[in-house]
Amino acid sequence: MTDNARARKLADRIQVVVAETLDRRIKDPRLGFVTITDARVTGDLREATVFYTVYGDDEERAASAAALESAKGVLRSEVGRQTGVRFTPTLAFVPDALPDNARTIEDLLDKARAKDAEVREVSTGATYAGEADPYRKPEDEDESDGPAEKNEGPTSA
Image (cartoon, rainbow, N blue to C red; front, top):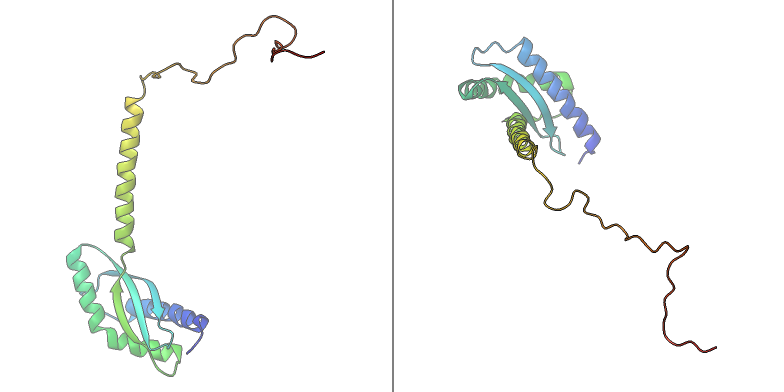
């Protein structure tokens, strides 16, 4: 077993190598606008998962996924050549769910903004249900100098 720092360094290097190789060497027309977002390597450095996003619709995503699968051998050999590790990890390409999650969050935030605007619009001419100041105020005391003395019963002198 290796330490996590080595696996992280190898994953970072794999991400760079795959991105550069896709940009320079792979000339597949099915390959759309692909961005390599992350790479993760298992602790034994045998398998690497490469996360990617594709700009476009579902058809372009499917075509790019097929292009990545067909270019897997070239990419793996380039990773092995540039990293210099004893065993070149196998590559698995996984579409990154981050853009979909971000789109969902943006939709939810838009709905929340619309609800806030609706509540603000309804409350513009509203008045309080009770008094404007709901806090109790102490009643005015007698105009004597101090507080009234309490008589707590008979006192013995």
